[in-house]
Structure formats: structure tokens, C-alpha cells
Image (cartoon, rainbow, N blue to C red):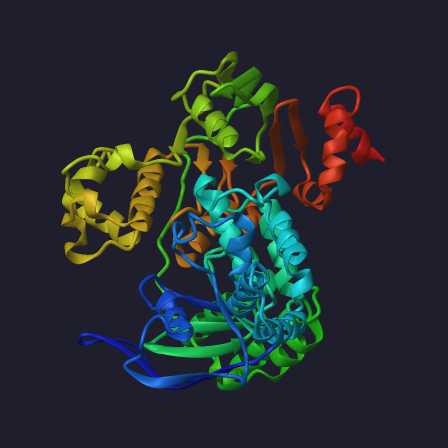
Length: 549
């Protein structure tokens, strides 16, 4: 349990939030949401003790242990992977080290024997005899194979280090768990493992994430940082988003009677509580929603970018044909013999266990890379707009933002460009910024604006949710759902995939898995997919056969 009393944090003259009085209780997972700069990570740093508040206190339950997802990827470089995870329970780790040091003594005294006995009792009380196996299970669940468990952290890749540090935070089932962007650099399979783990977690969890599906899957409450305040709501991110949008529409409907608004809100809450995700918390979460004071639901001050893609012309019958494409990097086969045809209304997500494969395919069909073998053909009616994974080359210039965007616009008047940038949340003097100093999220909004000016009927998107805040992700997601053209994308955002795409193509070293039912694909187990790759005939034939059965 975490109790926050009269909390205030101020930087200079700016107050992020004040008069915060909240209690976070066991059995609940709290999703911390807010616009960029609202203070989400700052709030977690205060709770962890890394940052002193201007005023107020943070209290934990008696004897409770706090665990935090570390952000320093180099802090444990000289430790083995397994030892790094074990240090997640520092008290247990210290007991282990002292106990082992005593047993290594050559002159073992009576005092050493007494102390060793005390330590053994403490060790057993903390379930120390199962510590290494528990740590190994966590690592395996997060995709770190056994052969790496005794490797040094410095020998791991950045993405592997992220997984080890996440295992460290989870180790020992701490009473209070703080997770800042835990899904970064995780593939879909690992994210689903983490969702399941946290959905059944019985202690107190606070999490900051830009992954909406993850927040919806694990969170019982939303902690909204807005209006310079921190407000606690029952329900997950989708509930908060839909209810805040409803409250905004009602605030704008000045002629609607108060009783009509109340009835509308009550119907919304009732409908939403009937659709709560299946988990151990379902019953309690439903009760919380039913008891929610509807007067607490307020329109949000969040600003959503105006992302709209308008194709200049409709796609023809021939869109894209890919024939026998193969690609290897550094001697490793990313994919081979890839063949597929894109049809009208297709919104395809490309997946692979090696993220380089999806990027390589999109770079090839965008015309930026050459395949090892095979070819592809675009239809004559097709115009494309590409959002690359790495956009650094686009911003390696001293240009002002308004001039940068003018490169891609037929209308170069300042009035038009200013208005266009305003829709993408660049206001006032922002439009005269040097593009080199823009943040990752701002650069992504610029790249999206560039795409919008193309009026393309086919969108190529490599990790479209990268660097964006929740508001931009939501706006991007909504416009892709209604887009009247074709979408070809790679994404680790489960919500993007589930709501936008109607077809999955998985790239493998043995061919492709092509499935026109996204839900069925994600319901397949890893074992089932592996069996398909080993079965006779083509993967497509095997999938079609399974689907018919």
C-alpha cells in the first residue's frame, strides 16, 4: 500500500501538481496517464524516493518492499544476468552474499556458526531456496534464454538488458511495484506474457505506458495528471478516454438538460462495466465502475493532433504484387521466398521474431533497399507515403520547421503552413524552431504531416506509435481505422493492430504465414505456429486448411 499526503512538486515557478492525497491499495494496478510534460515519470520518481517533493509525504505499509524498473542500462554491466535479477530483492541478496562469505572462511568460528544459522533462517523466510529458479523462470518468460543466464550484462544487447531489468523489478513479488514504460523494446509475445503476469498480480502496481492495449489489459484504475492535479478514476485507459470524450461532448451541448446528461453517463458506465476485460479483478472492477460518481468525470484538457489522410484518387484493381523476395543481413536470413498480393481494402501488419525483417521489407517496397532476390510491382494508380523507422536523415538540416514542411507542400504560403502545423499542435513561435532541436515525438508529428501532404492512397508505416504520446497515438489510430486506402505496417502496438488491420503476414526464414483474421492469428499458440512452419506444403496452404477445420 502507498499513501500520498498533501503532495506538491514545483520546479522554479512552475507547479506540476499540488494538494495530492491518494491511497494505492494491494490487488490493484494503477495506470498513470497525462500529456507529455505533465509529470508522470516525475510522480513515479517521487514515490520511489529518487526525487524529494516540494511538500508532502509518501508512506508505505509496515515492512513493505518497493521495487522500481531501473532506467540505467549500464549499472550492472559487471554482474551476471542471474545475479542482476536476484539484486531486485536487495535484502535477500545481502543475506545470500553474507551467508556465502561465512561458508568460504577457512577459520570457521562458533560466532560464524551462530550468524550463519541466523542468516539461514532469514534466507528460508524469504523463500531463498527457490530464488534462482524463480529468477530463471522470469528471465525465460521475458525471452532471455538459459544460455544467457550466466553471461555478463555488458555482453547483452540493449533490448536484452531491458528485459533483464524488468525481470529484476518483478523478482520476489514486491509489495509495491513501479514500472515506467515496461513494454519498450518488447515484442508482442513478451508483452502478452507481461500482461498476463500483472493481471494476476496481487500487490500494488503503478505503471506509466504509451501502450493502450497494455494499460487496458492490466489496469484497474487510471491516475490522471491534468489541471495541475492528480485524480484517481476507477477503470482502465479506454474507459477514461471514452468517458472524458463523452464529458467534452456534453459540455459542448449547452441545451441538453442536466438529467439527460446524467442518464447518458449512467448508460455509458453501465455499458462499459459489462465489457470489462476478463481477469481476477473483473468483479471488483465492475463494482468500482458502478459506484463511480459521474460528477467526477470531466472533459480533459488534452490536445489531440488533427491527423487526416485524404487519398487524391482511389486505388485500382492492381495494388502491389511481391514475388519471391528474399533478404539477409550479416549472413542471417530475415525472410525468403516472400510472395503475396495486396488487394483493395487490405490493411496489413507485417510481423517477425526479428524486427529487422519488417523494416527491411518496408524499405524494399518503398524503393530504399534492394532485395537479395525477387521483385515487386506497384499498380499504376498507386501513390505511397512512407513513415520510416529512422527519420534522422530528414532532420539533418538547419531549416526552420515552417520551411522544412514547405518542401513537401504545393502551397508554400505561411498562412497555409502555419494552419497545417497548428493542427499538428505546433503553435506560436514553435513553427520557427530549428528542426534539429525537436523532440522525438515532435519529429514524428512532422513526418506524419509530411505524409498527409502526399494525399497518398497507400500508407507504409514502420512502427507508427514510436515516440508518440497517448494523445497522438489515439488520433493516429482513429484516422487509420477510417482511412479509405491501403495500409501496410509494422507495429508492436497491439491496439493499433487489432483495430486497424484485417490481415497478418508473418515473415519467417521458411516463408510467410498469411492470415486474413487478425483475432485468429493472435489466438494461435507459438507451438501451433511452429508446427505450421514444419508441415508439408506451403504455410498458406496449412493455414487455409486449419482455418477451414
